[in-house]
Image (cartoon, rainbow, N blue to C red):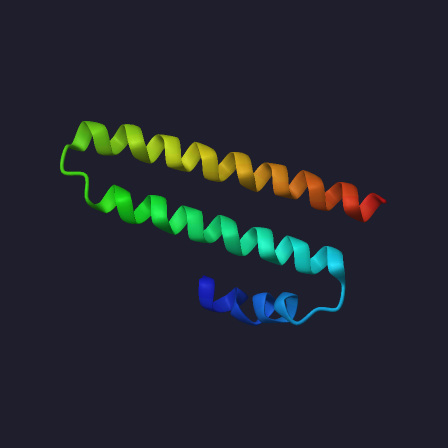
Length: 78
């Protein structure tokens, strides 16, 4: 899946459009934060704690996803 969007991310990185570039920067930051959280999850040995922590990470990821989508929709309306 990530390989499929690699060229899109490259296009965003090279865009002259300030709004698109800002979304790219935020997306890149979010993925880094998600990756760090996920790497931390790998070290948890207790299954109950792992499930709790995974639930928190996924809720945060979905919340961020929905917020970013709302911002993009508002920008497109704009």
